[in-house]
Amino acid sequence: MPEAYDRHLVPVFFGPFAADLAARAAALRPRTVLELAAGTGALTSALLDAVPTASVTATDLNEAMVIAGSAREPRAHWRQADAQELPFEDGGFDLVLCQFGVMFFPDRPAAYAEVRRVLAPRGRFLFNSWGPLATHGFGAAFQAALEGSMPDGAPTFLPDVPHGYADPAVVAADLAAAGLALATAEEVTLEGVAESAASVATGFLTGTPVSAAVQAREDAQALQLAVTRKMTDHLGPGPVTAPMTATVYTAHHHG
Image (cartoon, rainbow, N blue to C red; front, side, top):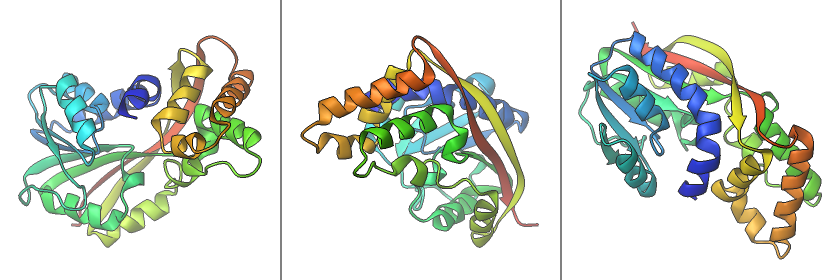
């Protein structure tokens, strides 16, 4: 799964937002940075290019991601770590970063409490989360194709999970529950560019939890073809560009 995800989805979805988040991080001039849910290092590399003097510790829950990330971005210190039980001392980081990871934390206030613990007193927590699925050109087209091809019930992973934490009021409440204050919440829309709609369809179908529901079916191959065709019909042939919206948050200790 990391390979398909990394090849088809990461450059299209995460590249533009990694550049955005890295520029925001650089403006804070951090010395010690902790990245949560770093995946294979899309943001990690952008951050180190923007702030080469920073000491960056990149973590992910998934060991396969950590192994791939450390090979791809050896300038960072890589560690397997659960965001809800961070293996770091109190107050050791002046910036904690997370790109499109908070939606996957089972207990967000618990994870945010850990962020608060490892943040220096004047430190910042900078992260982003996808907007509603309708605001993501690729995801919306894929989900529509999936529902059109699986009338008996398409997986709702995309609207429920990556795009299911899109209300800034909910995010603010979760942060407050952990003793963090939301400073800014900014909606950002960037263009994603993919080599083809088929490539993105392949990424969703083989590199996300949607794959399990599809592979379990006897008509898995026919279903994949149908979804890919519908998505191509919607977005067009050849290289495709679509808008993607996320909210970028900054938070800090109360007071």
